[in-house]
Structure formats: structure tokens, C-alpha cells
Amino acid sequence: NLKPNPNPAAPGASNDANGGDGGGDDDVDVEAALLALMDAWREIESCVECSARTGFNALKTVRLARRGAIFPAAPLLRAQPSRDPSSSPGFDAAELSARCTRALADVFHAHDVDGDGALADVDLARMQRRGFGVAPAPGELDGLKRTCADATNGAGVVTLADGDRTGLTLRGFLYAHGLFVAKGRAETTWTLLRAHGYDDNLEAFVDDDDGEGFREDGLRPGDGEARGFPSKTAAVDVAACLAAGAVLAGAAVFAFRTTGGRDARGSPGGFSSFECTH
Image 1: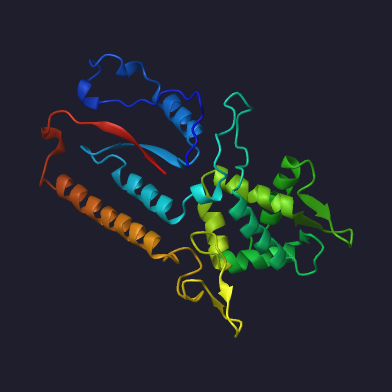
Image 2: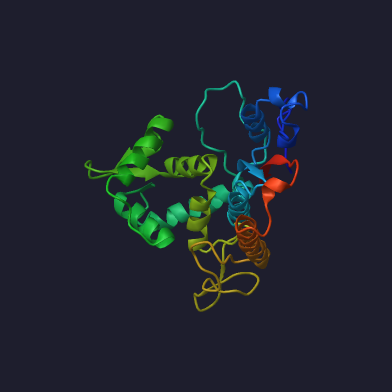
């Protein structure tokens, strides 16, 4: 359900075999064209220049494709055209999908143990340890709350009942994850949600009578690592394994070329393209 910008700029690519004589390719502002492409299609997570002939950025392209398969941004985003290109530059928080918003709200309320509608530092630290296995770095939470407060005109952070501490509200929490996704860090949101029992469809586990969580497909929460890989659905596991195999194959081909098995410079011409992963 991709909905492009109605007036996107045309993307371009260059052919290094032309040597500048192809006419027209040298006039293409590739960076501007790619930015326009990513603006028109919000589901595109990254663009990278690569070459199959020389192996330039080949492994990076595969790594980005693997990350896109394991931590896709599209399910986290609301399907709509991107922001107006004439708006102010810089990163704006992405508008999260309804399903992602519900899942994050459930995680928020699960850690709001006193029910005051805000997460104190101790709550945020507990959430981070569960999701990522590490405690927040000194000053990290203060920086997060400051960013959320500035972006939401103060609505993202409130002063707690004791008057000495501040807490992150649900609005600030959702803004933070929208900002993560907008900056290409969808793995942060996915890792947190998977650690709290959400699968690749952003569906929660179903509890059985003994209180131990089961998914609707019969798997337990332990049947997949909370940190995001292996995933809890077979389709994503297959895609990730294929991508990992492609990395190894690409490394072998690259090593074969660089050790004299094949001299890439002896092949006339070649095509340099821009791979966009989504």
C-alpha cells in the first residue's frame, strides 16, 4: 500500500562505462534525485551507491538489505505520502502506524507501575535493560527527555509528584520512537517490541491458563531471541538467512577477484547503480 508523493522528482543513475560521453548522465544530480525518491516513498530506508563490476559497496548493500528484512520500517509507519518537501529541513518524527502505536502504548503502560502517566528514570532504565540488556549511559535519559520536551512544547515530559524529578509521558515516548524510525533506527523500536512479546506483525502473545505466554501460532516467547534475531516468524528468518548467505558469497567473489582469479579491470565497461532497500 505504497502512496507516493504526487509530484516526485525523477530518480537518476549513472553508467560509468560511458566515461562522460553518454550525454545527459553527467547532468544528473544523483544525491538530489535519491533524496527526492526517498521523500516520495517513505518505505525506502536507505540508498547506497554500489557497483557489481568493482564490488564497491556490495557487502554494504547486502547488509542494508538484511537489516531491512529483519527490522522493516514499513509496518511501523502510517501509510501516507511523506512530508511536504517545502517544510523545514531536518528530521521530523515519523507518524507511527496505529498498530505500532498500540503496541508501544502497551509497553509504556506495562512499565508505568504507579499509574501516574509518566515513566520516571527508574522505569525507563528497567525498560531499557529488558529490551536491550544494558543500563542507560549517564546523561542519556536526560538528553532523551530534553529532546522530547523541546519537540512537543513540553507535553512530552512532566514533573513528577515529588517535584524533584521529571518523567516521560506517552506522547514523548511515542515521539521518541517516531524519531528513531525517521532517522533509520527502526531496529531500536523492533528490538524493544520483540523483547516485550510482539511478533513481526506487531501482535502480542496470547496468555495460556498457566500465565505463560503463547502466541496464536502456538509458539512460546522463548522460541525466539528477544533482541531481534532469530525472528519469531519463519518468513523473516528465511530472508535474513538468505541475506547472510549472500554476504558470504559476495565476500568469496570479492576475495576471488582481488587474489588474481579474475581481474575486474580487464572487463570493459560496467554499470554503477544505486540500490534502494525497502
